[in-house]
Image (cartoon, rainbow, N blue to C red; front, side, top):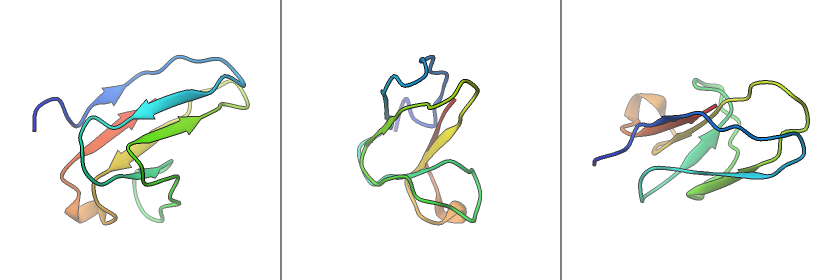
Length: 77
C-alpha cells in the first residue's frame, strides 16, 4: 500500500473536536499508547477527539490488535 504508516501533526484548540482518519482502508484499532497494555479508543476508520486541556496528545491506529502482527500503523500528534 502506498501512503500508509504516516506520522501526522494536527493542530487544534481546546474543546474543538477534530477528526483523525487512518491512511488505509481495512481494519482499525485506535490507542493512546503505542505498546501494551492497550486501551482501545475505537475500531472505525476515523476517531473524533476533543482536547480538554492544552498540551501534546498522541493517538495511534494499528491494523491489528497484536503489535507483533501489525503491518500498518499511523501516528497522530
